[in-house]
Structures are given as structure tokens and as C-alpha cells.
Image 1 (tube, rainbow, N blue to C red):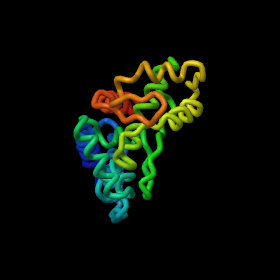
Image 2: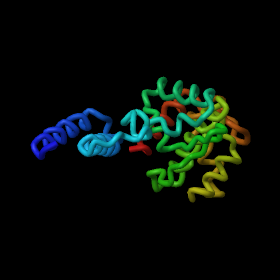
Image 3: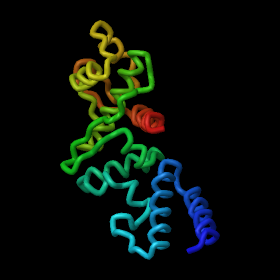
Length: 193
């Protein structure tokens, strides 16, 4: 392949990459460029690079149990959120264990951080067991881990966010309400951006 042909092929690669979602463009470019260079040198493409960008989106998803994947897809579809965004916020292993992976809650206010953690914990439980549960003790532990734990105001902050819970009980495990689920989806999009 001469320089002119390669320049033309590179231009085509750039045009193809522009059609990919923003978060996949770099990987797509890398794969297509490697393919073009391999073809130029007459080498076969290793099987691991076949499939281009579609393989990169669901790398985590291929390893998770089908019931967890189904709950994730249902939540994503109901709230118009991409699975890619979900995987930026949550880690799901092959046993179905779900953990919150973000380190920055994108808020400086203690009460808002506590609210955000409650929303994420509810979605975490939805993926893991289908419950949307927000156990008070788990929320307290998450607040301690992330830093917004304020012992004096923890209960008051919890009461102030009762609209995100269905049938709020200040001393028990609560479930996310429809409003809470919607706010959780919006939060996931924000944190993944």
C-alpha cells in the first residue's frame, strides 16, 4: 500500500470513528488503525481484536450472571441510560456481586453526598438482587468510606430525603421510590460523564 492509499484509508477510518459513541472513539480508532496496518503488512488480525467497538462496551457484561444482566438492561431501558454509563459507576463480577466504583460523587455538600450514596446503593441492590433496598447501616458505612458521614445530622439528612424512598422508615431498610429511581438514573449519567 502506497502513501496515498494509506492516507485515503486513514481518512476513511477517521470518518468511521466519528460515527461511534464518544466514549468508544479512541478504542475504535486504535482497532481500525491496527487492522489497516496489519493488512498493509500482510498479517492476519488476531482474533482478540475482531468485533471492533462492540466488544469493548460489554466486556464486563459478558462475565456477569444472566439474571443480573437482565435487571441491568431493564433499568437501563426504563431510564434511557446506557449500559456503558452504568459500567463506569458500578462494577459487577461473575458471581453477581455489585460494587460502587466511582470515587468522586461530584458534590461538596454532606447532605447531597449522603443522598447520592443512598441512590447508588438502591441501584446496586437492584442489580444484585432486584430489591432497590437502601439498608440504613450500609448507607452509614458508605458515608464513612466516602467522607460525608456526619453523625449528628445523619438521621436528619435521611428524613430530609424521604421522597426518594417508598414508605420511608427512619430506622429500617428503605426502598427507592419511582422518584428515587429516576434521580438515581440521572445521577449515574452525571457521574459517568
